Image (cartoon, rainbow, N blue to C red; front, side):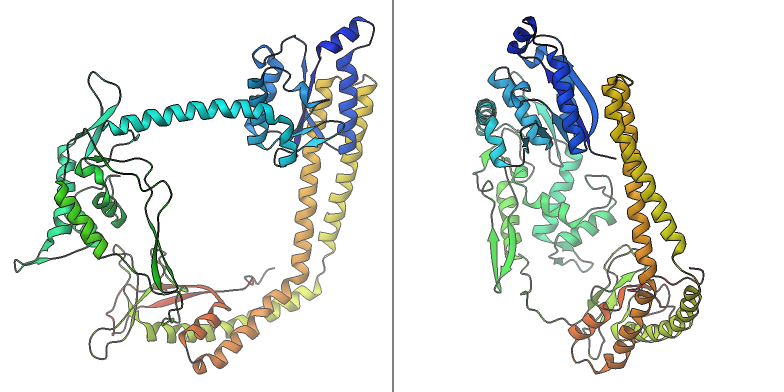
Length: 530
């Protein structure tokens, strides 16, 4: 779609006085000047709005309301007007509305003397006074709302829009605001989660094993308890329930989670500015006793995950390359734990039935598969290249030239529209409609030129691109076994492969199986019929 522009015409009081004294039709004169400006700047006019009624405020200017609707909707790139004052001649409130509408939509204001870009700070100064008044009013209202929220919070009311799992939001009887009421069947699940986290999961021998949020999520799924969304439980959902002070009878507002990251090997906690506000006693009943809730927080803090430093050594040469064909997850390495047990590559999805294999087995199979792929690729790419040498790019070049001629013809036709409008052959409605149609066809022609040029360039480079993979894979196969570290192997594999899909449905870890790998080399696919 081409960029579209509107024209806005409006008489001032001085214009009306001048017309009364024989000064001529102001709107006609301004329309002619702005159409000429559009012609010089090669702009496509979408609508021409002519304000024919008198009125200083936006409420009394229907054409201005239509213009602002288009500006706010983002359908136009700019508005042509004789002077910016003609957009906002009314009170300071109207000036603020107009200025903010143009600023937030990124719509330009184009006059014969200057183009005002709302993204340019210096251009915004023209509306500074009107924006100041509008902004002051907004801040006053916002401060009033924030004071109301904080007052409600201090009174223990629940001011968030949605209730946490285990509660429902209810209106306070005889007063303004909301609080929470317990939904007993879900509250029992919350209590169960805290019990599992604090006391542990009972084992067949009667002992209790301490577990985390991931195991709790699996346990809830095994017990057939639906999650808040109705599906399976996720570990982060369990963690949110364990860390939410609402269950202990508190209320909070403007809370953000702590961000943890490692800097020079040290765990650093970053708290957003608006996080650390004190908890307030809520009007709602607690589901979890506060001592029990605090115990869960202490356990969570003691188990805080400390990421490995950023300079950790890579131990998996296939990291970020091998993906499960069944569920799409990246396979992960698990270290062998007993005796001479080998490292494994496993799908981390607990619901996936894909079987794991030893990392050595997958790595060896990958290299053999790459050797076989290279042999087959060499046999395939040579006849394709020979066939392509017999052809040429003449059809694409002819299509490109035809698209360029079509674009030039349409541009010429668009330029003649202004003459037809001035001669009275076209009305304003017909002019804007024809200009929009031609601009759309010009845009399509430009797109066709771009696509044809890209295809032509691609055809000219296709042979080189298709052959460039061969020396990279040959180099990898020559030196792979001599590479000393998994990091070096991983980097070299990634120069040749986009990804590898892994499939294994039968067989044990160390027995014969149906393991298969599907390679995706970094290459344009070669077809026998280019």
